[in-house]
Length: 275
Image (cartoon, rainbow, N blue to C red; front, side, top):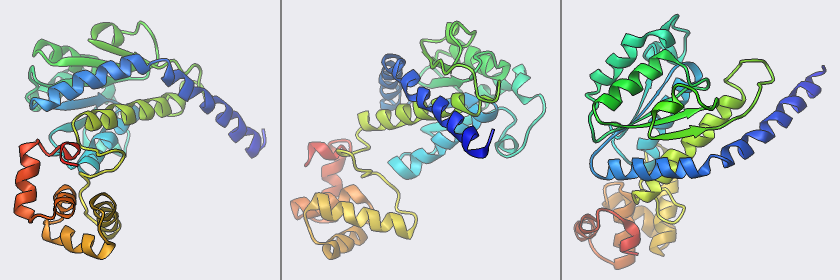
């Protein structure tokens, strides 16, 4: 095959992924409802996986604090082999049953939490052990796999099965399976945060303005939603202590930062209840 023929073949296969995910939307939505309810009452969400699955979970979890302004403890990613496995192969990590159980003990998993096991095959020993122990502690168990009737999906409250079929490079689950997992994780975390009021309309009003680009984005949101000039928005954002929602309320209601903070606190920081 020429280079063009190779990528055309891959692209053709990738087109099937979104349709496969579409078939699992009811289960994904059910998982969102469960996760949102647990997080609302102080619970935590843990993604558990090995290899590509683990890396995708860690990546999605790490994006929640800057995007939605939540604490790093709310959504956490656990990968077999630990931090080293994010960039290097850790031999035997995915087969380490005791490490899977220990990973749950280390985070003091409890009956308020949700554990989402991610495994393309649905047979990864590390993930199965983590899920089993979490269930014993009363945590809600959710499974994400690409093979139906796999051990993972048969032992969870919500089974999300995205059947992507054979990979272009046989058994290389970083391809279509990885793409499907990324799409599902995007939905789970984003829809959950929307349900928790961390998004207003389609805007990231809880973002942490940690660099110049994000400061600019925050100021633009304050200007648009607060209906003020960009200059005024920048001033209010500074006075608010770099808190987008507070600055928006200050602009919209023409009140001080302290008053805006109290108004938000009274509605659990749900901006839609004010605007």
